[in-house]
Image (tube, rainbow, N blue to C red):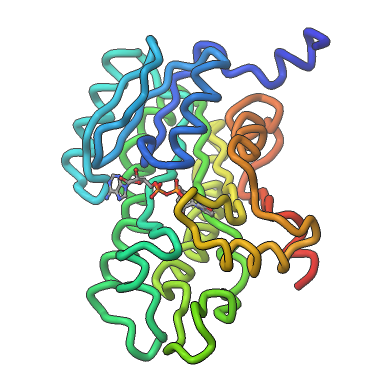
Length: 268
Ligand SMILES: NC(=O)c1ccc[n+]([C@@H]2O[C@H](COP(=O)([O-])OP(=O)(O)OC[C@H]3O[C@@H](n4cnc5c(N)ncnc54)[C@H](O)[C@@H]3O)[C@@H](O)[C@H]2O)c1
């Protein structure tokens, strides 16, 4: 690669925290950034299964403000800086899983307990992590925050694809998830406005569906029919967007959102 272009996308030596880093997508971002020379720190409530040499993790719940503050201080004192925070952790039950069976209910029957849990992890948790890391980035007068939203930050779910059988009671993509993801865009814009004067950029990444192996084939097919490429995303396809947002290649971008969902937005 031409060396100027390569430098533009470089994350070499950057200290990058990924929340939910032990999950399906978090692990893909972690591996890609680690391979590109970043010092990757994973925060997750579960222990990650990550065998790189230069990786660090902290088992924490991102909704626990004290734990997040402490974990932030550990990263700052171990590495002397925090370059990037990727806010990726979320409750995101896979279609067909037991958790989804509880949460994908018709909206008039959706429990307040599920609502509070989903908003707490998917939105409040993100706020807590930004509030912990921002003072350090302000002192540095540099930093990048990437908030992982979803295509569902931009539209409601077409719940017809979540029906398992036509006769069965309606199944709906969780309303708490969709509302929280719309909120992530608001959080992104407001913090971008607040932190821009310190040289800190805040953007959102809104991916479409990347199926885990356990996803029912029927769902995969129905989902694929909704976008212009007629398929779901493949493993690794979001790493380029993450590299762009975490590097100087996106130096004039803040308060914005990258949507990557094979044209589903353009068809709406
Ligand atoms: N997979 C997709 O197709 C898809 C599509 C659009 C958006 N997203 C978004 O991408 C992100 C990652 O999704 P995923 O599919 O990898 O999900 P995942 O469930 O595999 O990963 C989420 C991770 O977050 C962690 N987590 C959950 N609650 C936590 C808490 N309170 N504290 C700390 N860690 C916590 C989980 O332990 C898990 O490791 C989410 O924000 C999700 O909404 C995913």
